[in-house]
Image (cartoon, rainbow, N blue to C red; front, side, top):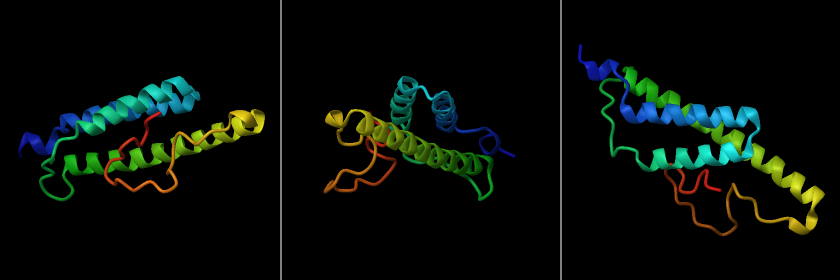
Length: 122
């Protein structure tokens, strides 16, 4: 049995650390920390290796990567919901300061695909 099949890939470990930080910031409802965690998450995503050897289906690395992707998707939705709530509050309380949402699609913008160019940028 090779060690690569049982040892998590270093990039996946970095991804998990940033997911933990983002989740903790969201749970605290700390907007500044969410912004910092989002920037750190974006940096990790930009440093993704071209390919990760996943070995055979069901390997530890494949499962780790799939779990991280699912968690990333859930946290992305949480960030989008929090942003929408914040934007509605600002628009409701200060209509003169209403602006385009920080998160979400821009009208007329082309889709860039991939692991989110500016996905969590603020």
